[in-house]
Amino acid sequence: MADRGPTITVGASSSRCRPDDPLPVAIVMPTLNEAAGIVAALRRLRRDFPDCELVVVDGGSCDATATLAAGYARVLHSPPGRAVQMNVGAANTTAPVLWFVHADCRIDPQALVQLRAALADPSVVGGGLTLRFDRRSVGLDYLAWSSTKRARHLHQIFGDQAMFVRRDTFEALGGCPEIAIMEDLELSRRLARRGRLAVLPATSTASSRRLVEHGTWSMIAFMQVLKACYFLGVAPEQLARRYRAGPPWKRGSKRTERRQQGLATARPPIELTRPVPARTDRAAVPEEAR
Image (cartoon, rainbow, N blue to C red; front, side, top):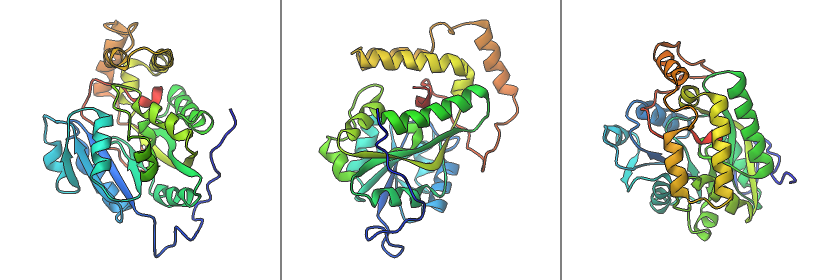
């Protein structure tokens, strides 16, 4: 498939994106039990993107996520489910651009400039950032590279790439499809039918913890299997149950147990630019392996 993504020129100017009249952007962050890292994440967003709306949509955390977030963002509450939370956030913001950012991702400060430059082209309906991880390994480097290539050429953008979209296009599509899994894949596929998707040079640095816990190459294979099952019509609810359980060939293995025990005493992740906040463990594994 030909690459339909536009070439992004950082700092490009246009009549829609003048320094004195920037395109308004709303950052929507779905959360669930993110107390360990939510303050650091929101502080960075406030510092780096002070002119953006910032909304946290909590899906029923049983920790102090909502309370902590209230000091830095407007906090909304919704039933759990990332797609539901994204739609609630979109419905309660006003900016013409929606930018969905995960609590455990660190966003390059240059991303907003590039996002606005990309959207100066009216044919661009949305896009995402270049993926990287907070650790380095052959498997993680390959996954980051292949995920960015996939987004650029196959127009499949996942949540850890900080997807952005024009509000009018988002609303015309009926919002994010409220399915149990692969909601970001399905949304990006629908967006690609409406216009161009831009993959920006700016990075979204995602947590690699769950990938490392289960084994990076194992997770790459597992998520490709789940994605194939989704394309073949397997019910998202069934896929979500498998997703939460992790790779079936790794469950209960001694090697996996040793890896998880090792992570508890391992050295901190490699710092690529700035520290990444720790994240409360969740049952799901990262989307970027898809």
